[in-house]
Length: 237
Ligand SMILES: [Zn+2]
Image: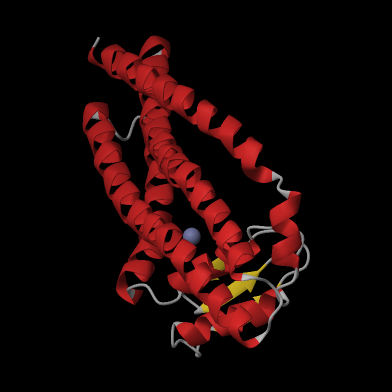
């Protein structure tokens, strides 16, 4: 009975989160295309050059930069201290995205490494607990639900802190880079840079809560799936 109550509470929470998320996704689609802003952003240099200039502003010149034309993902790999830039030359958010990855490269290294190892442990523990429960080795399933819940909370707090910090600071760092660049190269007016910055601010207003909601969804989904498994096994055995 306890597990059924946990499952119902979990499903209601996920539905509420999904409802909120759905609204945000609709709003993201609305701001995704902006040809006017894209024309201003296109005047700025290639992604790698932007990345190097932003890293100079951050006084971090030891991080490696790698270009990957095969997909659009940009990522900072803490363990090898490397920024991988995907093919984002046609995306008008590219300056903010590059700034975001550069900020990751100057965040607290211990926390970045903790996040990397902890995420792997968290994923591994979930798989192991599912397997050992199916084979009847984990008998105290309520304890496992509580453990998964706490592991999920730690995962959420660390990841949310790192990403929210990078998203907030990227907006201002991108603006700082653009202002600096147009002082030396008159490719845009101050007003045009302001328009890009306002657009980046709008994206953050939707992007930050959406990202956090997705993280909550990801962690609660595991608890719900595990509880569902326990209930199903209870019927079978
Ligand atoms: Zn990030």
